Length: 179
Image (cartoon, rainbow, N blue to C red; front, side, top):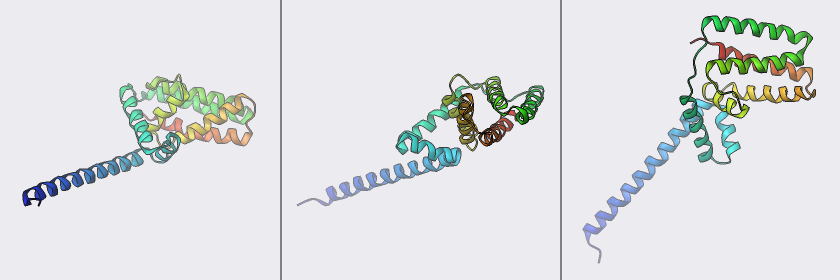
């Protein structure tokens, strides 16, 4: 026959395990909620691309840690004014030369990103870095880049080029913010 002491010890152990599991589930839910809040639609896209919630969340955490190691800085007012002038010229060029304007917009975005401290050698890394601070804009940035690549092969329609310019403009405006 099992003693009362053994039953009490077993009950306590079971309660501790249940409490630990509840805390683990609650922690996981908080993490999911925090990442969804931080990354918005990029959270869902990353989960889908990675194939699992655990891998996707690890990817997003890795992005955040990577961006923290970068020395991202705001533009000075003079730099902001210069690049705003350059952007205005790119947009004006779009009317007569939309394909070349998209190339210029893409290069201008990279130039501003590099000046601010983002590594620019690899587009996927740039997009991942952008997703940390501009999660609502990263899908637009990716879409604009797809169109820019089509444009390099002379396969993009004028409407696609117009859409790319809109996407680039939304990111460019955010990159220019001085604070």
